[in-house]
Amino acid sequence: MSRLARLTDEQRAVVTDLGANYCVTSGAGCGKTRVLVERYVQFLEEDLDLALERLAAITFTEMAAAEMRDRIRRTCRERAAESAGDLSCVAKRGFAKQDARAARIWTARYWGVDTAPIDTIHAFCAGILRRWPIEAGIDPNFAMLDEAEAALLQDDVVRRTVEALLEAEDADLLALLEHVDLMAAREMLGEIVREKREVLRRVAGPVLARGDDEVLAGLKQAAAD
Image (tube, rainbow, N blue to C red; front, top):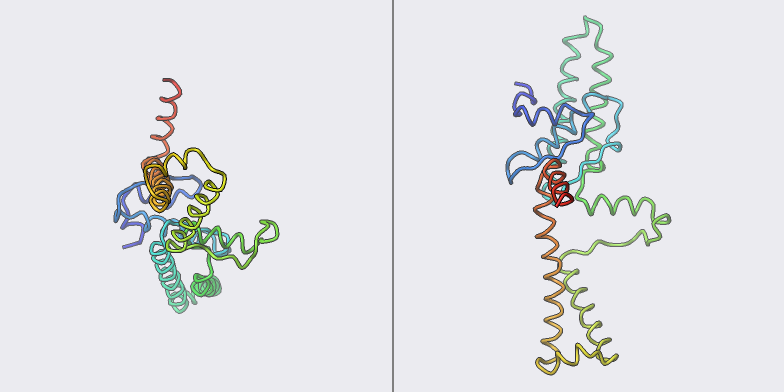
């Protein structure tokens, strides 16, 4: 059974229609990563001259990116083995040279998967910035914040903000301090910052989960109202 035969009709359309853009939405475990991997491989199969550096596969989590990389590496190994295995079968028909080239290309792709742009959004963007740091105006040795570091940075910003407001004798902060102590005021401000991020996530999440047509219809309806 071919790899495409294992897909549903909708999934197969996304994988094979390389000239169109698709927005694929589904619940967890429904095959989004598989469809993305198969579409990626389809690009490679249709153009043996296509370098991995020309394709970007981007996902949200490091786990999903690692899964994509492993699946693509496995597929490249399978294609290299298939092409190499075909050499003895087709030599008499004059196709050995062509299959040898395919075997070399898929083997090179197999070894190149580790450096291919198959990343999370932040890792992909970091790679671009490190490649052109002068144009971006940043230190190429920058590091990305993890969640723990981000929390510490946020606490430090809140602390310095409260100190600056105290020094400026901010009326709102002074009014708040009539009811709570300074530590409580800092915690309240920190909670507000965290809640704003959560509100953005809750608002953006449902929109991102909707299909293009649904989002467009909603915008048109809002404009009409």
